[in-house]
Length: 585
View 1 (tube, rainbow, N blue to C red):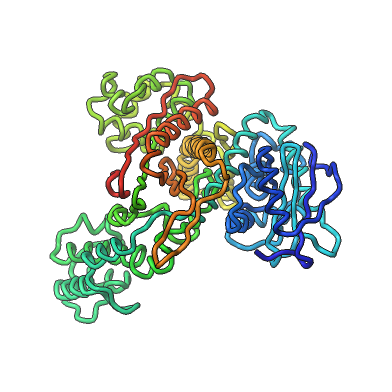
View 2: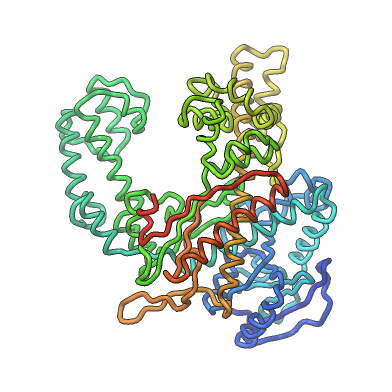
């Protein structure tokens, strides 16, 4: 860990307004580690600029904190929320924190509460009365980030419904801690299993840039069927022209479009695209880059999607194909507890709209099956298609045909999505249950709408404006549901983490050491290793499986109560205890 110029850390106690309440204390790194371990038992809230930059340095020292306030993540929410638009933070001109939030992938200078250089890469902290910490520096401390913290506290205090936003910020920051901890611990990964699968699908490993045997075989078949000996099937342009020369009318080489065609070349082309994707996304090069000592260390980006969903910074953790999940194997004597929330978004919609009849359809059962048994539609497939159409704005085909039936059965739920869509079509914003607000449409959208209202507007101008208006309405329609589902998932994740931590008296995060070439688990306690929107995996000793399953189940119930108080909606889970991830599907 790189420290400040004098190798010391500064700690400072702040009150609830972010004002220093005691003199700064100087500590060596060892003293600081002891300080964190002792103070964290009082459940302080450690305040820092960016969990993704700061927390990994603590984890490398075996220091696990219970909660934090991430200034960068919280700034995004508070700056944009409709609940805080009267605050000084929301009305301030664009500044460094907006730039940092807009380019989370980039290293930015606001590394700490009291603004250090990028090279120092350190932290600060606070408790509920707040505690801050940073490496000591000989120069004067810049208080601009402390000012940001105070602006955030003031924005919360003046918010229309501060309790909603407080829960959202707490969940968002807990998620950031989980992301860092999961990256540190890693997802158990058997490279020998992965290698066998790749060899079976692609053929023996070849030098980088060369085609494995199976891909070369398919490439030859494609060339033969399209009568083009020089065709490179990796080039969309070449493939497009070759298919056109073969008499096929296509708009692109996307798989879904090729599947509609009949020609001897189509089957090998589709196979080639599938295997080529496997090689590029999760092949041998991926395995070497992302799997270390038997662990896949995913680089998560909490809040990376505008709805609050996570993204990843390389590695594709949120898109692990089913074919390679068999390589995710629990350690000897351990198990993977895999849990996912069944029909999460429709249940969220029922709770948001307070639609008791729709909530009743999912009471302790499959929601889609409950819709069928209620006599609303004839089959589970119809129920799923109709519900997804309502949430995503599908108005044609089977979804459009079934929508009137759904409106009659669940008028409150459908009215909520329709109101969100109409707001978007007018260029307005919508807000999730806890206060995350959708972005307004950009200047280009506004210009198109204004042009359509001009007296000299053409039919083409008006048609384009209507099309863009409907498209933005589909976005806002889904934003409130997907965004609130992301909030529920964060609360679920935070509750799981809290209860798992209670099983670990040492408060030391799991990590890996290598002995005789074998990965070994230092911390023998259950810990989160994977999160995908509405799914979690906990790696646990086999003896603790029942405890972990109960924790995950209780956490889902707690998340529902946190968001929707006493509204009677069930958040059902599918829970599997397996030796490898593929067995859970």
